[in-house]
Each structure stands twice: as C-alpha cells, then as structure tokens.
Image (cartoon, rainbow, N blue to C red):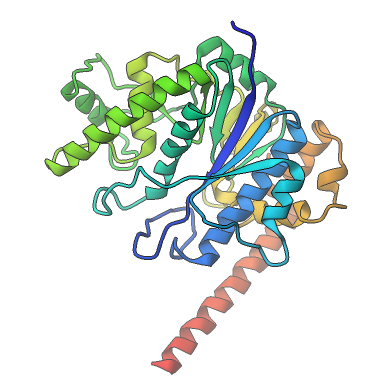
Length: 353
C-alpha cells in the first residue's frame, strides 16, 4: 500500500425546496421542505461531527450541503460551532436530481453522489475518503475502517435481504434481471449494499464517481422508456459494487444500521464492538437529546474520556443494547406532548375554516 494520505470524514445535508418534497419514512410526518423537518437533520449533522471529532480528532471533517447559509438552531450558532471544532463547510449544488415522478421517496439521498464527486475532485489517490449518513454516531475511532479501505480499495456495508423481499420497490431477483438487461449476467440474485457508508481510497472513489454517472444516465433513460430501473442511490451503488467486484461486507464489523423503535428493535450487546452506529429511528429521539448535550460545552459529552465510558454514555441516549427506563419515560412524555400539539393545531385549523 502507498503511504497513507489524508483522512476525510464527510456527511451531507441536502435541503428539499418547496414543491420538490419527497417522502422520508421513520415517523417524520412533516413536509421535507419545512424548517421543522430540516432542523431535525441539522441536529443530526451536529451530533455526527461532534462524536467524530471526539473519536477522530486528527481527521479532516467536511460538511457538504446545498444550503446557502447554515441556520441557527434556536440559540445554537451552527456556523460558529463548526468553525470551533474544525469542520469545513463545502456548499455544493444538488445536481443528481431525478424527475419527481421517478420515485416518490428518498430523493435528496442522491446528494451522496454529489459528495462522491466532490471527494473525487478534492482528494489524492492515497487519501482515505468516507461519506456517512448524518444519523450516524461515532463511538470509536476510524482506525479499523481505514485498514479495511486500504486492504479492499472500497469498504462495503452489506445488507441481507431474502431474494423475493422488495427493497424500495425492487427485489434482489428483479435487480438481477436489470443487471442482465445491462449486459452484466450473474447466476444468482446479487448481494445488496447499504449506502449510509461509502468509503474508499481517493483512487477508488474516482472510479466509483465515473460509474455513478454511467448508471445514473442509464437509469434516467430507462425511466423515460418506461422500463424498470434502480429507484434509489443505494440500488445504483449496489450495482456498481457488484459490477466492479468489490468484496461484500468488508465494513460490516465496524458499522451497523440499528433499529431502536418500540415496534422494531435490533439493538444488542454486540453493537458495542462497532465503531459507528447508524440510528434511523433516533433522529428525533436520542440524537435530539444528545444535541442538547453537545450544545453545552460543560456537559459530560465533552468531558468523558473516549472509549468505553463515552460509548456507554451515548448508548444510554439511543437505547443500546436496550431502552432504559428514563428513555422510555422521556419518549412517552414527548409523544403525548406532540400529540396534544397536533390536536390543538387541528382544532385551530377547524376554527379558521
């Protein structure tokens, strides 16, 4: 392996515009163009970088966003905060916009492709580049991920689904058929990969970016022709990884998509062996409460030593390996309060009508 270059840890915040909203499940029943919706994700961005800076102080941290200006979150000055902890803000246009009719959910997640292009244009071949979803929290250092990337070129996060299970409108069997129509024939349904983590050397990120442009244009053409196509950035990335022959699951020992809602719970003690927790159900729960700790420079968030103590501290907020009593009580009270607000708003609207 060549001498290691710089390490880049990136997340993105793509703000939907009025009239270009998309559906983002996981209980956020708010218009995605609204300030209320976007503030939830901005809080995730803050916690993402705060946890990474604590665990990876020597890495280069970059926020990629299409926002013209970073908003304040109440009294919290985000621009000042990022300047203080060394996070660079890169303002990028959202160029991988498909027609609204293409697919009704997760449209802004294609901004990840703009991030990959940014890394392609701003990294050297021996740099280590990582883009992660903003609802991830770092609980350990990046060192093991770096080793996986250096060994494999691209470290992949494999997700395991039955061949006939629909994943955002396509089964793995249906993906295999599209692969065949594109001239890539395989004997069985392809492995499937998550896109919450995209990690590779600068050299391989450049290759991925070029492949993204190819499959992006092909998918838009297939849509225009009424053919089946890849619906999400995750499905396109899965195709690229399979086509290029990257080994499956090389990032799995270090990152996991962990579900912590009352309805669907996958957290376990084994999560303490990971370096990054992806927590889709905690955006407006545990991550929101962690944001309050991050915004207080005297809180335990900033004073606890990283390692086991810090990991257990974060775990208490996000329900790993299980929801503790205080978390259950707080979330129950918050849900009741939110329900009361919704009912009052409904009554007000009826009176106005």
